[in-house]
Length: 101
Image (cartoon, rainbow, N blue to C red):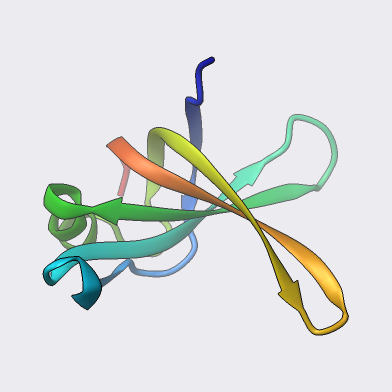
């Protein structure tokens, strides 16, 4: 099976670098993009995590409003939030290209 996603969207807010202490202080960054749908005024929002060597470049290069092409592996988790179960989708970034800054 293949778990690969590629999409183009605009960065919602500036990415932030964080440190994951349990994994030997491994750096990562988190950001989200807005991906417009083909029809209508609907937009999908995708949360993205960049690990290791991709963390710093995303923070240095990407800014709110940047048009970016992203590719990576989708990670889907279900968590209990209050009385209901919520599904979270996160893209584990493998590569990105800035199309417009």
